[in-house]
Image 1: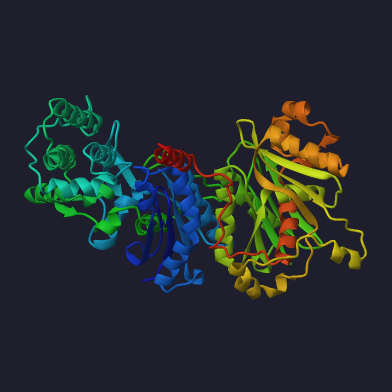
Image 2: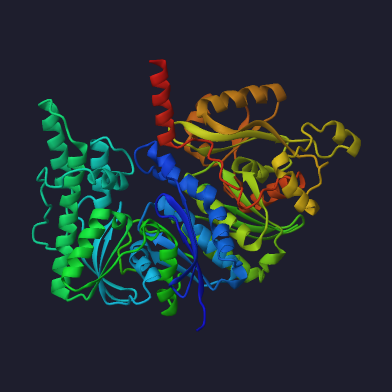
Length: 339
Length: 280
């Protein structure tokens, strides 16, 4: 089989990443330079600082990806990059760098959708996974329930009406003093807590069975904390974390199961940073197992923002003949399935 | 020596290919569209027209700041990507020195300035050494002998053909580029002009934006640069880069980063808070 080697770059948020992926599934290198230590000082990602760090690290990260794959640019067949959605200043660094490399080397160039990348992360470790399937994408910036009809063909069944799931984790973690990043910290604390201790609401969006809403839940947690504090009562951080997490996971699983029934998915995948949450992984796996649906989830390193997933998504676009112009811009609010 | 030069620090997007003898191509546009959309198509147009073999380029020059943070990064990332792809060194050209090269050789004071908002400009003040002097006098008039940053030494050795350490910088930097209140810049120009008897050439979008203020406080002979010399041009970036390269001021594509001359707002607020905590 002929090999297509794609150099992929991802810089949509606070990870500077590059990877070499062969034929969409064979990851030869996957370099991620995280800025999390810097942003932790500010309690969240600061866009201007993220952009500055990207430009300081990008060449080293790209070179490392080539070195780890034991390849030179002479052997690369195409260059792919995340061009949205994400932080515009951060995206622009990757887009300008990827374009310049492709241009100087006369290589085909492709812009890739970040969420399409997250979904495609599932292809990397699962050679048997092919569309159609259902996918729940949950991260700090996104909450999407997606019907993957074919490679590159998506139907968004539902998305968040307000906060992304990961955003709710961050905000609640800050409120109960766990700090940033909220996802892993709540996951950790929740293991020692009682998920049934507090009955937090399950967010619904009126008239839409697949959309999500997490801002009501977030407010309910903040109100609960306020009330307890006013009464001078001690707050059990572990119970709050576990009960909040259960509320989020219940809604995510509930909507996913609904979609499994309606569309008859035989395969279901999760993706994005929140897909490494232990409670979500366990609950989705159990829900799928009981319905005899094959469940897929990427390893944690492929759940976080990375470029291997961009290389995976790019391969199927490349096969279809998709190419981007030198005028490709970063699109911070790019919709899935748009080009 | 052939230089590919990029300037996306301000409103204009500009690309040039230039040797010591010939400006082979220069393409400058001034529009609202983002540099992300215009820069690479402009480069491709130049490559196509010149039938340029990129392997014949010796170094990539980029206006490294000050400028719009995002604009600087688009130019820098492009230069870094090309440098990585072709294994060529970069020349980081201070934006305002390149703008001063639009008036190469003048004995006037040159004050290019970029609008930094809130009555501030990024500005520098420059003039040129007497160029017509016999070589002996030129040597004694040498104000700043070319110095090499030790960290760049090995790189420059790798590109030894590009550097000649005895080269005298024709540019005299009277006030290095920095953020300034427009009034403070005018005071400096008043003093320098009275001391030297030289007139002042004002350029850059800052001179346009604060013309009324300048007219109120600049008391010495001055004029505003005409449109074709007033703003960033990649040809001038290339010309300054040729001189900087002769002085050994090259860097690797990986090393290069823009020089914003300003910390981010989040860092500034955080520093203020910390100061407040320490004071309190």
